Length: 461
Ligand code: ARG
Picture 1 (cartoon, rainbow, N blue to C red):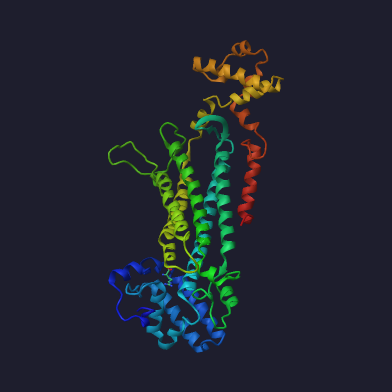
Picture 2 (picture 1 turned 90 degrees about the horizontal axis):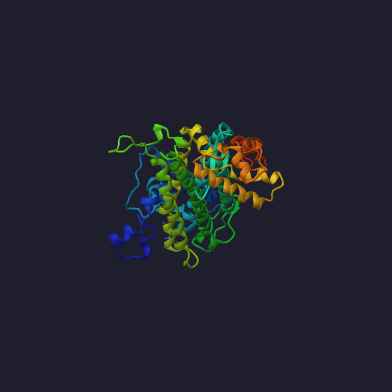
């Protein structure tokens, strides 16, 4: 049934109907739509706008529809334009006259604005708790690898030794910020647009405070035109999702590298990798590749919604119906990517021996050799030059700085003595990095205990 047949004398063209309809994708808002309608109807009853009996009938009718949709005994009827008309049509068919009063003092514009907010708010909560699981798994891996040495890279070239805990800790920071951003977005969006009507409020004595509080909002929104035409919160949310995906994609890229034959830093669990149909030896990091690849879909939703909104005059315009398909896809994508990445991380075996060997090669201790000279009064710039020459010598000989005989050191600078070997050992290089935020195990343990406390106390949310 249509909600607006009265002023028309001819039927809508079929293709126009299909083009205009949103039921194929807004059906997923059925729970939020019913929840919002129950709040609205009970407010109408309390305010004497409809009778308490009518409000009761509407509420019971809506609860029945919710139950039947969840149990699969009621199917969506494609002849309805959208989820709002579908539910109102079923309600009126079931309870009669009272059903026709549900839409008193309401427009689909404030109705859909409410439904989307309720939906987005739930999604924010769910994604935040998925991120919490990811952070918990990350922290578990970090605790195990405070003394697992590995090369740190800049320009994808070995730079200085770090630890695996330290490397993973960088992602812990990223995903913590992501959770913060979600919490921030939730706080800003948590105001109720119901009661804004089509755009100019209504002439009924609605109790907007009541519906806002029943629906878990801090309060009602304060400008009815903004209420029906604001999608900022969705843009913020999808931008938060884009950052999450960007972080997951970088992490995936590292997993792919680490899983390569050349690196060999990790062994993916069989349950989280796939094979090749032709090459029997293959064990591919498809999950990481897909997470990296799906990032584009989430960015696309962000670019899409920003573009949809940029030219819209106030207040509601049908363009805004486009705030659903791509954003829904972005939310689904982010949820499944976080969940799968978490599983992959939890089951991955880190090949600590390979990491450590790799850290010991590639002159990751060259800075420490220069610092050794600085400690003995050589200006840093001179020390840098001296160690550069030593590196060149090692490269010619195909050895590492640890393997270079003391005479060779002393030929280039008499400041060296046998203590150089201790000073540039992998262990020393990492353990001396003791400032807050550095990979030294003591500094790292301190940070890990802060993370742990924060997660336990939810200090950051
Ligand atoms: N399906 C519409 C949407 O998603 C619902 C609001 C319709 N409002 C209107 N004035 N036609 O935006």
